[in-house]
Image 1 (cartoon, rainbow, N blue to C red):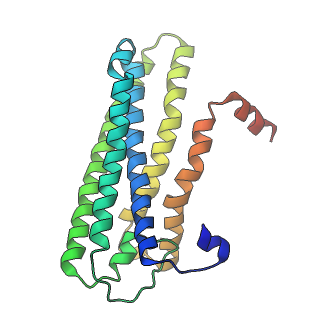
Image 2 (cartoon, rainbow, N blue to C red):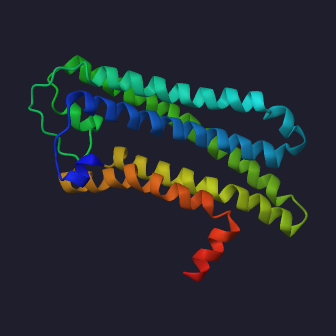
Image 3 (tube, one colour):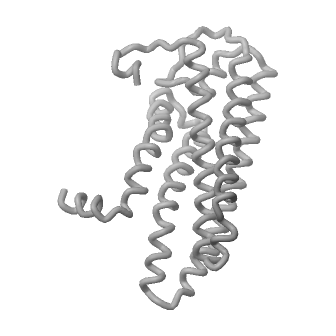
Length: 224
């Protein structure tokens, strides 16, 4: 934000490391929390009588702590490995923020590069497991919602889930497209645009997605 406001394109080495750490930390923690929120909806709709037992204050505190701890550990491993690599290709990043793939392009350590690829694959597997869990949970949720006899009850169940589904879809679709796009369509301008897409769009949409439950906000949007 400081660089944007003052029209500068430099960042210190420690500042770059801090930026990578906090970016990965918040992204990882957000996806963990989205997975936990999915479990919350699953219990609320599929096992409502057990909600107080399965999701008491102690369980919620443990899950929140696990989400933040997993985000911290993921960010620490990636940041420590990336910034332990010797850089021999200059110090100019073709990006508007410090992003690991662009930092790796400046490295001349083959073993460190392979370690980071291994960490990325491991993190990708964890994300995939969370994605499978979310998908399986929503299959059960929709099956349970469709069995609700009243139309009002079905509407309440679906409206509870749609905001969460929207947030999950935005995070997964943008991140997946950025990191799994074919190399044949890669270009500096496209990489820049896609980085804006997955680093700016989800956080910008989150307040709107989660606020649409507020009746006053919906009335204000209708007036606009």
